[in-house]
Amino acid sequence: MLFAIASCQPTVATVPSNQTALTYESSSENFPNPERGFFVAVDPIGNNPVSPLQLSDLQKIKERNITLVRRIYLLSEFKEKPLSPSFLEMISQDCETARQAGVKLIVRFSYNWLGGGADAPREKIISHLHQLQPILAENYDAIAYMDAGFVGYWGEWHSSTNKLVDNWTLDVTDDARAIFLKILSVLPTERMVTIRYSKQKKQIFNNINTLSIEEAFNGSVRARTGHHNDAFRAGIDDAGTYGSTNPTLVEQEKTWLNLDTKYVVQGGEPAWPSKPPEYDDCPGVLTDLARMHWSSLSTNQSDATEIYQGWSQQGCMEEIKRRLGYRFRLVSSKLPKIVKPNGTFSMSFEIINEGWASPYNRRKVEVVLRNRETKREYHWVVNADPRLWMAGTTRRINFAENIPANMPYGEYDVLLNLPDPTPKLYKRPEYSIRLANQDIWEVSTGYNSLLQSIIVAPM
Image 1 (cartoon, rainbow, N blue to C red):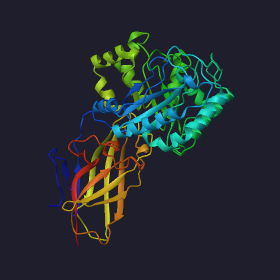
Image 2 (image 1 turned 135 degrees about the vertical axis):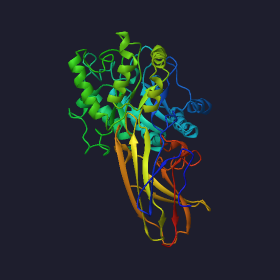
Image 3 (image 1 turned 60 degrees about the vertical axis):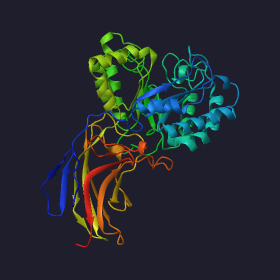
């Protein structure tokens, strides 16, 4: 037997005699995938100090097909003193708890929560960031991305009691610019920081241009600055997010964000039922989620319960669950039937992205050959970057590598692996990307089977 066909009956195409081509059945199932989708917000209770995350709580969240948790760390007790060792240890432990549960954190630090209140001056924020640097460096693998935080009410970069931003125009000051650049410097370059207002990104870097494909994911500070909108579809200006209620100016800002968010993360939450009421109905919601390439959205804001109910009643909630972030589907593959040891194993596959965004963090792509009898695996890294598999596009990936001269003869299943590249998570199946196809996902390994096999033998 030269290839295997699973119960979904993929189509076998006519190809040259030493090749087999298959097309694959799609799946409409809502299943969990890392670093995308709805997130559960774990916010402070009033202005009380936050408690450590509990593994049982995170496991219940994961059981709901949710892989993201937004974690707000309240710093109100540290406005005039250093962060305590116990507080820093709690952050480290939270990251470990997240790993154990198979989720990642969206992290934000704020000096105030209920009712807003005082933030901290530049010097204190900078000193706290110095303290946080080793914690973030050690645990960035458990962090999906970080909201800028620290400044203003709720860490949202408005209403700063220390005048870090202009409280009328929301323009950034030199102090705010220094704080933001410090945040980027203490967070490892593998992770992005989101800012609340897009105009502030332009001001911080003194650059009104959107990111280009040449800049995308190059690790620069601009390429690592994404966006979070915490008043999604609350009105024509999203409660000040777009800086104007003039439809023309709002359209210009959305056009800018449409281009910038192709290469940086976009997340956030609804705020409250919109004015006019129909503004947060499904048609406009789906349009903006797609246009701004949303990857993550809160699922449990108490003042947005009516909005969530509306999405369910109007029939778009399931589509939102499926399409937030990336959703890769395997279209087809072409493989050789037989490869000899020390010969070249050449194959290709096509993947379409049916989500609204691409991954915003680096991800490996591997081809795996697994011996059907011994289960021994051989891995090859594919020269491909899933962050560039853009929404609505199909990519054809060509792969060619030499088979080891001493590779045992036999039949080998062919699989795709899209694992987390960090050492602690690389072998964790729940942190690998699952493709939106029927009958190809291996829960125990995190591999996606191509439903084909090759024979390694003399030719």
